[in-house]
Image: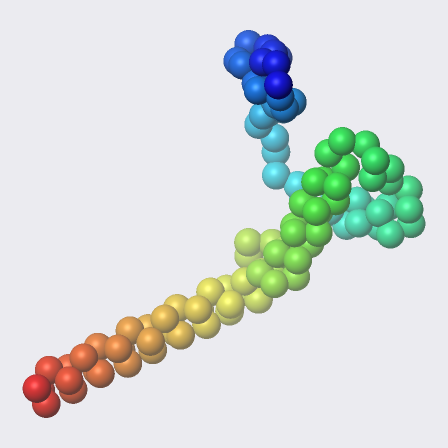
Length: 105
């Protein structure tokens, strides 16, 4: 395979390299619109990058469903509290088991 220069002037061996551009995070509204267009069949998946955008829209929508769309959402606060309580329970259980083993040995 022949080496060739890509857009950044670096060498690529037999594969096309894409430019990485900083982008703003996708909003939930944008994700919903993209998913609706995908379901209607209005998006051409043969275009490069379209599948990645649809996949990102799906991830954004799922995260919004799980954690809440807004940072001030009550579900998000409740989910974080639940994670903290479960982690604390696990730590206390492990410390208690280690203490029991240390006393019996």
